[in-house]
Every structure is written in structure tokens, then in C-alpha cells.
Picture 1: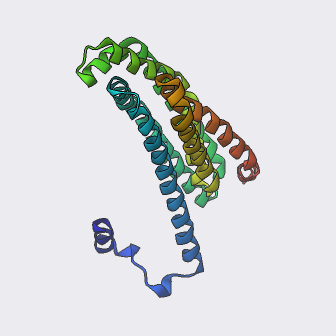
Picture 2: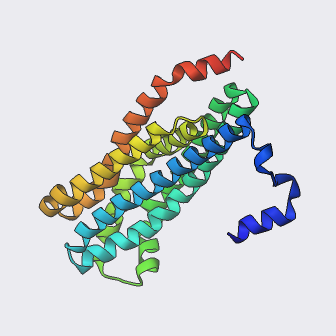
Picture 3: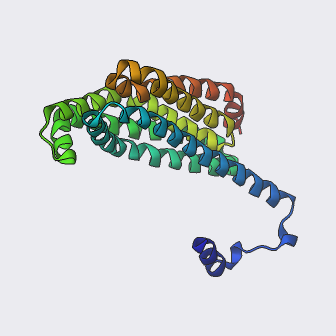
Length: 242
């Protein structure tokens, strides 16, 4: 709310009256509303899946809770550049969609994936060479059971970051070019996968199922998002001829 007040007071060119709200402006506002709603729902669905998975982790005991929490904190640092790159691609895609230069969209996707690949190489080296020391620093613990289980989580997740990177970048690209349904469906698949693991697999397979949960859902959603992009290839191909 404070942001809205600041914008309206500091940037009079952004103020408009109902008379100025013509058909083109209404379409633009409607488009932005649905795009924002889609991105918000996508984030909410992801968090619901994480809550469902966490409930099954809590049943495994304090050692596994500590191990997964520590590993997850480090993993979240691994994923931060991906989120930033995804938002950048979504913004760049929407700008070039509006400018009629859609052929540049794939350039941003390729650049983002290249940056993410370089980051992934660093993540792999850090995980396998310094992961134990990082976990000790995060937990303040010398319990080898906790350290080994936290490392197990990271060593299973880190190698599968490339499919997740493609998923994040392409999902945001689709959002940027107003394909809002496919990213929501991908997030829905991720939620379903986490619920399946939480309800059926973690109680049976234990902590190892927790470690494989997100990598598995990443791969499934990766395949889905590739099919979604292939389905809208005509739009991108037509745009490249402009």
C-alpha cells in the first residue's frame, strides 16, 4: 500500500482517470493481472508441496529433521541465482513480446541457462569438496550421522540441478509470453509429486525418499515443460520471422 502511495505521489505520469482507461489499457491491465495471479499461484502451490513434505520429515525424528533442515538451507543458497535468472527471463520475454522482437527471447533463455550451468559447476565442486564443512558451520554439530545425512541430501539434489534450471527458466519464459496455464500445471505436478512422496514413499522408504523427492519432481516437471514449450513452438517460430 505504501508503495502505491509513493508511486502515485512521485510519478504523476502513472496516474490515470477512468476516462483514460480505454480498451487497450483495459486489456493490458487484465493481462498483467492474470500474469501476476498465475505467478502468485505458482509460488503458493510450490510452498504447499513443501509443507506437505515437511510433515512427513517431522515423523522421522530429530536427527533427520536437523540434517534435512541444514541441507535445505544450503540448497536454498544454491537455488537463489536460478530464481533471479528466471525473473530476469520473464521480464525480458515480456518486454520483447511487447516490442514485437520475440526472436530475442531465446537469446535470453540460452544466456540464462549458460549462467546457471557455470553456477552449477561451482555448486557441484563446493558440495563434494566443502559440503561437510559447510554443514558443520550451519548446524554447529559434529554428529557424523547428521553431517552424513545432510550431505546425502545435497549429493542427490545437486547433480539434478540442470533439469531444475531448465524448468525454472522455461517456466518463467512461458509466463513472460503470456502462456500462464502451462507453468501452473507444472507447479501442480510438483505439488502432486511431493504429496505422493509425503503420504506413501517417505513413510515406507524413510529419509532416502526425502532426498529423492525434489530431484524426481524436477525431472517430471522438466519433461512436462519441454512438451509445453514444444507445443507453443509455432508462436516462437512465427515471432522469429518478424
